[in-house]
Amino acid sequence: MGKSSPVKTYTRHFLKIIGAFLQIFFHWLFSLVYSGSKISMPPINDLLLLESATSLAYKIRTRKIKSSEVLQSFIDRINEVNPLLNCVVDKRFEEAKKEAQIVDDLLASEVISEEKLAQEKPFLGVPFTTKDCIPVKGMIHSSGLVKRKHNIAEEDAKSITSLRNAGAIPIALTNVSELCMWWESANKVHGRSRNPYDINRIVGGSSGGEGCAQAAAISAFGIGSDIGGSIRMPSFFNGIFGHKPSPFVVSNHGQYPEPVTEEQDRFLGIGPMCRRAEDLLPILKVLTASHKEKLKLDEPVDVTKLKWYYQDNDSGSFMVSSVVPEIKQLFTKICKHLDKAYGVKATKVNFKRFAKSGAMWFANMKSPNGPSFRQQLANLNGTVNPWMELVKWVFGLSEHTFIGIMTCLAEKGGCKYGDEKYDYLVQERNNLRRELLELLGNDGVFLYPTHPTAAPYHNEPLVKPFNFSYTAVINILGLPATHCPMGLDKNGLPIGIQVIAAENNDRLCLAVAREIEKAFGGWIPPAIKA
Image (cartoon, rainbow, N blue to C red):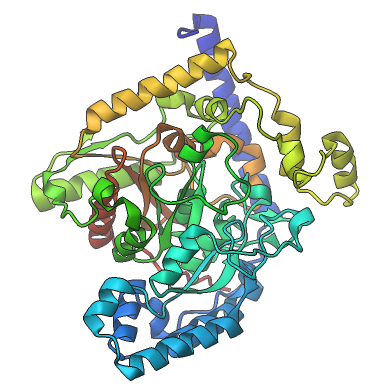
């Protein structure tokens, strides 16, 4: 199954060219559909909203500001921008106000030293948000599924418990795609979220509401989950930092839908999403407290001593958009910065197996006996009939999204668990992982596109569904990865790249993120003009 005949090769090249022209046509078509509706994005006037979570925690801890004041700033911001962006889907403002007041009272009593608080409660009094698939006790836990719209979480996810124990205060939940299985955050429970840099564009998925929330500065930081790029794509589209951690270092407890197999549990990662690179490390330390020895997050990283590698495309994956020139140029900028600032040379590589990223992800996500997507859409209570749902959707009567229905229809396609093609693609994944690990060692980082284009228009992912493969392949490789924003493109949309390291070398990714922020500026506050 390894080699293709010349006829197949030429056919693939021809179809890729045709596909590229079709994508250009549909992009133009969607631009006509969504043109003329740019609405002014409220600017950030409250300077507290511009501070990192780390800075806010320090100022609260040292009583320079009160937790209740910080909380009110974020509540005001949510009320100001959410009618436009629709990223927040549930709130717990009154409970959060009581918790913030408890923090203020504790600090006023001076019964605990600043040093002890810094060590034991590093985010004391800091408001945060998370997506509507990670449970927060007493809040909706729908995962964008209509059949779960009245479901209320009875307990916190372990990741939420860790953040609460560190003093952080959950204030709101953010939007997702239906059952978190698409890269635009829109569903029949909460509707569609809109990009703060251009409301005609997507926010990504499935942590799209969270990416949007962070870009719009509605909380100090957030956490998302990622099984195919669901942290990194929204971070890319919304111009923020987002980290998918190494396997099993952060508990996936509470995530819905739950991973069906141990392999899927390995691919899934819960991690931080934030505007400032300096917040990535302390948040990850809280989330991974039981894995200190494995991750060595306190060990300093000298970026000048790292081996830098990069690849600016996927070697020609079929049915995936080509990387646009503005994103390719980011790699050149990084190489020039490293050379000029430190005399470090980055090495360009070309792993051909990345061309099979989408096929490898779909194969490795196969399950021998887990619930089907039809059963998942029925909330594990029977199954849905996708053909009937498609007819109902045409008449606006289905409670499911079009992409959810199409996923049901497509899930039996491709290889089957355990068949020859499945075994081949799993082996190709293993081969690519081995090659990357041999390259990276314990002191290497690999720069790779997070996505081939800036944020598409709403619904445009339907005509380029496999573009998520740039992030998805990293999940099945079991490697940590951090998206790093690197400014805006010619249309004012965020672009950036992802940094990848060997398993459990998350600290290398985070150190590179700080270096890229220092060199290129990081998050840029959105300012949509009317």
